[in-house]
Image (cartoon, rainbow, N blue to C red; front, top):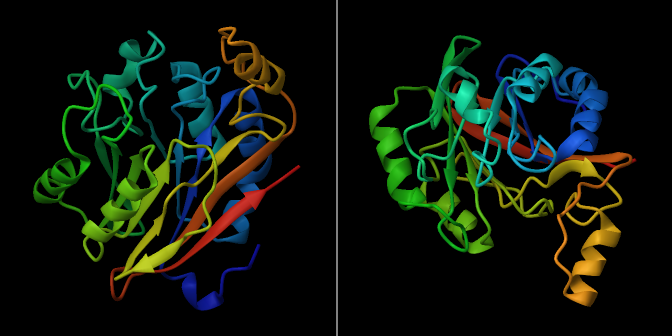
Length: 267
């Protein structure tokens, strides 16, 4: 990992963390977040928490734990409503955003705007359409609506999607209009980080979860599923975690992202 140049410190430094998967994911974030914030002089931390509670969904207790760790905004995905507990607190969870284009639409918020260093920063959550369930509108159309209706200096987007092409195309569609588009969902970090006309993009941030696993799930159980056709419960893997994410720098003078750097910490 690189140290942040001194002349960047007066601008905005953002840390994005990939899908936090179960207890191992929460533990590895707790272990490394403070040092990452110090090393990169981070002003804002955005993390995907849709797998943080036993691999599916989030609970109010874990939502509060993640905020207490130092995460500022939690994005979600297709498992947003996997835990019934979500309906008890999502409407009052100011630092939690759910996909704008995924049913049920009546609960929670798809965008939150927070002030960071005197700037209004909008963080939005969308789901891709390809190979995803319960998606009721195009993320491209939804993002246009967000830009038309949300007043902010900077726009950050978590596109929770399966298809690589959809996430790359989305980045190009909104290049120069938003400051960052980060992909989540696949749990495998991609090596295609780029700046496109002042927009930082990466197809997938990867995951924060058990290193010895299959996308955060127990290896033996997944092997059983593949080799015997036996249905399994996708038990969450235990053990030391890997932390994956990305660092993005925004230049306050131009309002453009000027740097994106992958972060991966293995056990």
